[in-house]
Image (cartoon, rainbow, N blue to C red; front, top):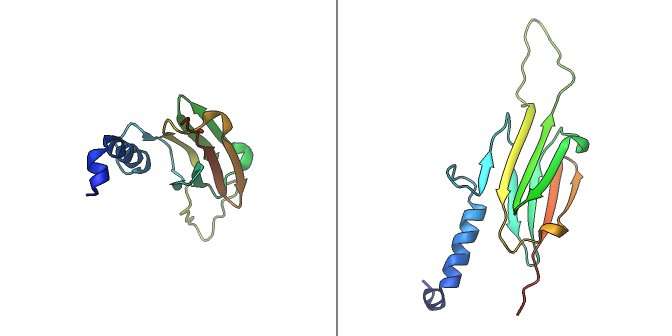
Length: 136
């Protein structure tokens, strides 16, 4: 372990914050909640001036996606519907999931809730969450 990290508890606290924020596999972690029929895959990464959330939502219309932010909790919800099912020779095989999705992520306190932007292209939803300017 780095000597600087041992002597400065803020590094430990910040490290734990980022571990909690980015570790989406922990089901008991209150920073992440998933309840839905299907769940789009999401990448979250920190860049110098922002956090970037990329959600794979192929087959979902832009108008069927909802994004909200309340008390530093980012919520993504929507629905994917397939209008046409073909039946051939008495069977149907469907591997793609349809239905509603609902995902929530707690954002670090450094996220600037008021300046979030989103864009949707080619089945990928990109949410850019700027960091607040640090007062020095």
